[in-house]
Length: 300
Image 1 (cartoon, rainbow, N blue to C red):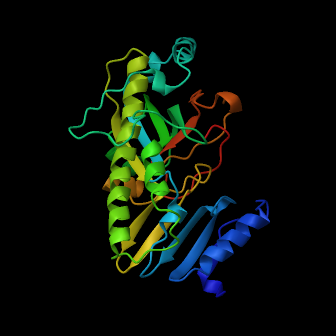
Image 2: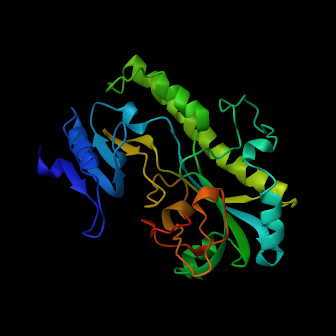
């Protein structure tokens, strides 16, 4: 294997599974792969989880997996921090085991391919209310038009069951020529999954604010995918289940998203309940952080 095709972003304190490294090396040897990068949270799965790769004249949908369009949306709730009441909010949220218990109305003209629209899913998906603590770049932050006292909501989810349907329909095809009928059909479904994953995150934010009893409409600040395929010139970038721990998000859709990101950090009063991950107490949030990686936080 050529050295330039394989690279790890890690450090000596970061433990990596040998199986995951072997899987990453195997991916680097696939036909058409130009380079492969493993991220700090790389771990083993049916294929390596937490990696990115660039290919030419071939795509590998099976590496994207079933959660096509998984990503994070950051929303301005429109609610001043003064409206936050831990006791009342937790009491209200604890009345619902899951977002599926709140009825969802599809506000879009076309039928939703997601049967459980407006839900988060399992795994490391979450919805978290946050408070801005520090702004590193005032000029970039000003472009968001976000009052610093407003509560914001970070939603991590994907295309839910629809992405799994697309994945299962592949019949575990290893690779496809981008112009083949199979690839064209897959990419069409892939793009539908991206659209509805983004819509799903928006509906999650709407449902949460509505359930808490507010009429405010959350405003999207940033929405980025970290699990999808993207064509760049004559190559294809595969972002393959990049984990929320690293916060690696790409494909900015606006000037704001090219400059802004969030960097969760740990505070002494930050409450981490592994078995009740769905609703987290507001962690420290840093707004308009330079585009790149996040530091790991137990509440993210």
